[in-house]
Image (cartoon, rainbow, N blue to C red; front, side):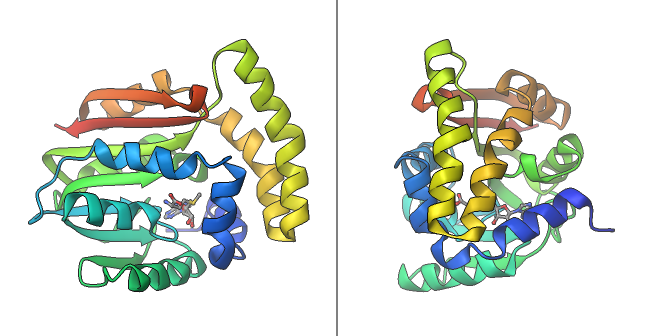
Length: 235
Ligand SMILES: C[S@@+](CC[C@H](N)C(=O)[O-])C[C@H]1O[C@@H](n2cnc3c(N)ncnc32)[C@H](O)[C@@H]1O
């Protein structure tokens, strides 16, 4: 598979962030990020004997939360070696190395068999792929029938007041804060607003999920719509 421009953008964007990702992602989401991840994990029902695939696992925040909350085993996959390196250190620190395994790979072509996983999660992924529909079909492919698929993504608040505040934040505060932190975070600060605006709203994304073979699709906006958790069941 050839590497697309959007893949390369994501790779370049995350390469310098690994060691500082956890600290600043929390800060720049105004402390909301961990709460959103907890709600995401609460949507996933798996037994301790089962295995979850966490796609775009990054520094393994969701993978660790899943292992702790459900007692299951977790495989995390990401295309960034730098993010995975920070994730492996974090898994070791959490003493979860026996149940959380991190592997390098792309969401568009997962190195797993059909129906191999009992559930699947992904976080902040669909803005970084060329074809969200094809990626959703690939995620559904590796999830067994009846398994939960759940995601977390940034969103644009729909209410006018919160939308105005959100626009001020992503246009002014986020690039400025990024610039103060480092060149890598300055890139993130400039990239995020346009990237989040370009993603279809959750109502449309839910149709993409259904077309990919996911049923009972639901979503909840968190923090006035700044975060969106979506979940459903593999047909
Ligand atoms: C914003 S981070 C999220 C990390 C983590 N899930 C979290 O909640 O903090 C997005 C991650 O998606 C990964 N990513 C982007 N495009 C990807 C792709 N096509 N395949 C696999 N991982 C990808 C990036 O390398 C990055 O680690």
